[in-house]
Image (cartoon, rainbow, N blue to C red):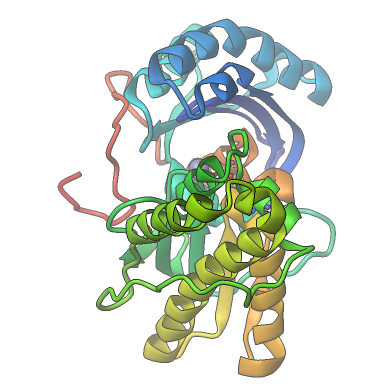
Length: 344
Ligand code: KG4
Ligand code: ZN
């Protein structure tokens, strides 16, 4: 097949991103991170939409320039339809629709969660790609899911968080320790210098393959209140051990469910994605399971783990091959399941 150039747009949360793919190869992947949210300790939806509006045109220009592609060469435009913050999604959706109309080329709508999973199929040298069926653990600031992937667009959610996402668990724990947002990477850094068995936090009892992280946050809060009562310097004196213990608990929760999912389905092809897959402990434990449990594991390059448009582009490419195009009246969806025929 001849070369197809796809422009992909991602604007579901607080990163504005545009990428150009030539078939399944990424030519450029530009991400504008919105730093404004740091001072609020979390993403402020109204500010995110406004920043997307400011960023989207420059980011698309940069993506085209870096790929050395003129917009007239584009074969299609792919965009994130959902799930995410509605105001943020509307910016990318409206931009993609207008440009596709102006250039008279097909429009392709993409489910953000499918994109996190299919990011594994971005052509990137000689790296191995998961074979079907595989289990995908998607862990980020907005999502925690275990998905059985039977084929590119045949996915079934086996378990997900009933409350906070795992990234939120990291970030909220960090906030309780007085660390700036997003605290996940800082918890990871301190944890590497601490003893993960120093403190014990309870693990939630949740049936099946679902997760719950809100109880952990509460137990950390009580733990801090209890200990700082007698010693106001407790956190600073024990920061590394506290972080290591929290991180161990969170990763234990993830690994327990992932192992259970693998046992129940008999699937040993395991793929991890989303921003939290940057965590050193989860990477170590997943890799260790290769030898211990006979898993074959896959973790994409970090730039394809966090929110990015390249992953939207790879889904766009697969849909392009199937001529799965969206009509011009397509609208953004804040809730959007990856399971076909779901009511979301
Ligand atoms: O995928 P992502 O960039 O954006 C969302 O879709 O949410 O994920 C961001 C999340 C944040 O909660 C951040 O704290 C967490 O990923 N994170 C980490 C690490 N790096 C990023 N959490 C723990 N350890 C890390 N090394
Ligand atoms: Zn995401």
